[in-house]
Image (cartoon, rainbow, N blue to C red; front, side):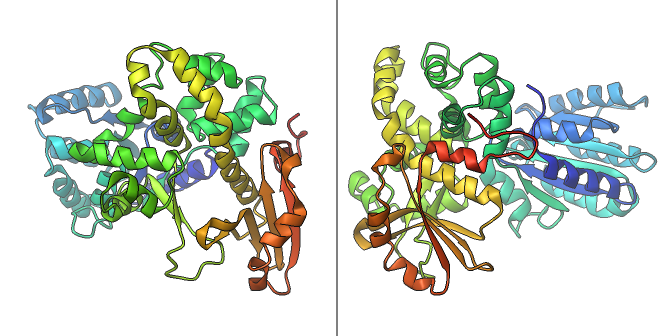
Length: 448
């Protein structure tokens, strides 16, 4: 699949490369696995002299042997003696960069925690002594969010404050997903939405589906729910490293959130535990969940719900992890029946997020959210605010738009609009076909 999007990230990385001509630059590139960090780093460096080093979990001496071979392939220099430590590799590259500009990409940098944790303080010392006198543009890539946060953003750690940029790479925007699906011959909003709902915009997943002719939805399910499917163990392999031995409790919480138990009280009543500490870590340390409050909620309000940030993990916990017994016995027809039965209800909640993102991508609004009152009364799917122009959009979102009553919506919004006196208020009924209006491109037409 060709390289899509990432214009802003490429521009930022190009700026840092240019700046490294006068002194060293350090960039941290993080984000969940499959989001395209490595491809982005290599794309940014393809026109420059660069070196790519992957940190696999093996003895440091064996890792350094691999790195030396990579250095010999890129640079015509003799390497004298045996190098057994990464600090010596890093020092060698610093020395090489005194006379020529070099981009160094170190992938899965967080894995030095299990190889030799002293590497981080050693890199800090070498960098502090040499940054001003070298031309090294170093990009450290990492997929384990908790560890990368600890390495570069914990003030107690040696590399705290050393990075010139920390770039958290996000999944593709809806417009970018549409570019991919269109290139593979699917310009309809239904396929676009299904790809967004199931992959969350993760480039690797979109590539897998597109290049295996697994579009539209029924073909997606055929590809995902079968023997040897790359998706079946994906959720577990993605995040089990984050949690360690406590993964069972975290997985149970994520399964409940994916199935619609979004309040802390609901989670605690099912699991019979105090979930506060787990939810705090899932949100802050692991960045897997987030909480949302009514758009006009006061600071400190306890009126909040949790949701899984990642659409694919949401899908995986709802339909795969919840039915592992059937998957382990190879009963894929049973799983397909469950998915076909419940997908519409599950994706209805994702449709709200889909429109929130479309409104955000329009650049027309500074606040976008939803609204509800205690007891989940008067729920409103979409509230979009432009505080400069004093504009307020209040929307109801359903797969079947014909079931929406704007009269009822206006009644539910009675208390909400009291906080927006003087605003021009528009009430909207939104269905999937309406998303075409937000995908218009001046170079072409909206999807059919």
